[in-house]
Image (cartoon, rainbow, N blue to C red; front, side, top):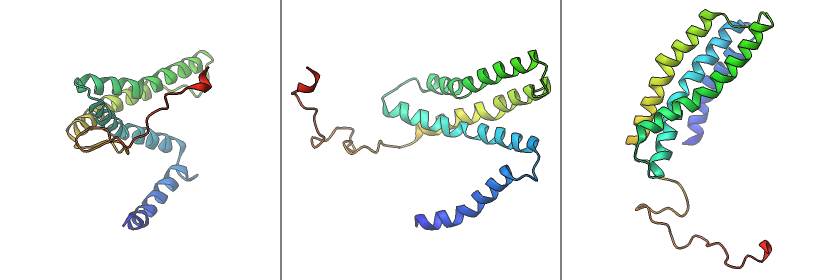
Length: 156
């Protein structure tokens, strides 16, 4: 069954790779496609964050989702701001104009943030269980898990 999924999805993935790496596609379109793909991964970030937080016993999932949104985009925004400021100071042509920066912020506000919240809601409501060998269905650890040795001669 897994091979059927791979056989079905491989052509689409190949076409996508060609579209983003093809020399016939302009650099501007490739950059725009990468920005949109990055924005679409925010839903995955919200889902994984909410499921992990729920498995660890967290209660304030709204705070978790907002923190995920900030930590997911914050480092990228800080790096971009620093590099763009340096490019403006040195008057290079690689500095992004103000209109492009506004478009990036609009993409974040209208696509990335809502997708992170939707992913967080889906993760909070999911029935996901951890896939550890020691985890039982009722949340009790199994006695067959190896305990750490009491003798720690190597630490002395």
